[in-house]
Length: 429
Image (tube, rainbow, N blue to C red; front, side, top):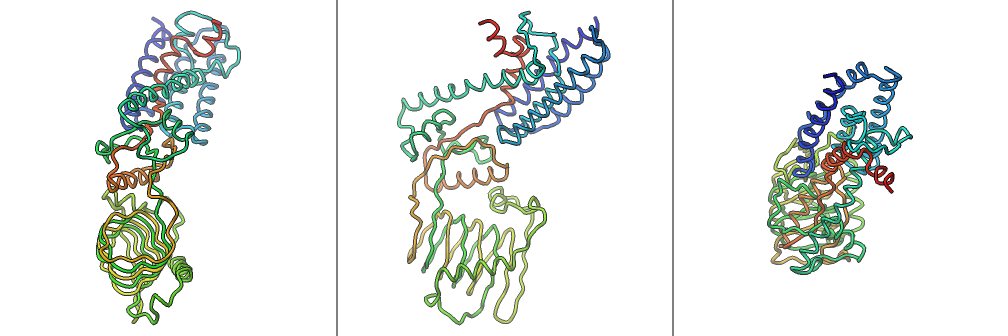
């Protein structure tokens, strides 16, 4: 048995085993959690590629297999990077393609096992990664068909869009790329999908007098007079006065907002590295806090507050500045400024005077493909889940995204059988 005979056996087995593991992870968790699989594929692939070039027997001996292997690897890395850069797929898909380019730079059987000559003369079309990509893409076209069948079955049991608003085009896209999921079955620790619905953020500019008890996730810019007691996770930047020479009724909301923004900007500590800044509300939802930072600078009448992380009240007096994050507790007093976000609680004697946002308190369809940054996506998911539970919504549209690593597994198997499936079918026509 020659090395090439061994190569024909070992490469398909290793590739299918690695992609099977990664593909199952991709379906179950929407990510490949153990990246050692890519390292092993590339490491073993480099060794096998060198041996393949050394032991290759052909008309051009050394240079033909070397050129073919290097060309495939270069094509694979370029395709992977470009598709990732333009947001077509995620990091795991890119790494899978890179690993495939190294482990399978040439067809292990020298061509499709059916023995059909499909006449690939163009080098790019003849590369393994391009053929696997084409095959995987063809399989991906059937994914919306599967979701359509699921939605047709769901529609037979009741209306699909009775709890959400959206245009006809948005509903069609949800029908093709998403499905309805019961809210009570969503596990916050295993949300391997993205929501296709959102609740518009409430916004109010003006004055609020009275009390509030409950939870709030949002941002306040302005001035308040009274007492806040509870737990706050996020950022507090501003000045706290023991006494104030004006009443809130004498102040203008727009001027107060401008003053609050100036104070916030003057005392914001900028970081050179944006990645070092904690996503505070996300940390709150995870109940894990990377850091907790407070700076208090006091004079006889005022205290400058800069807080990142968890802040346990109370805050009592007159505060002007910005509060941005997640709050659980009680408030009693007067607010003047701009408030936006979502709130879940009660107010026995609250009174609003000002301008409210025109956004209706109805869920809206929002098409997404789950390609946002991980922290941004997780924060949105957890916030949306909190809103769904707070508003006692029964079902929600979600999209599982495309498990493209799993599609690559099927694409690779098709590659072994047909080579480039699209060209194979075209050659039979």
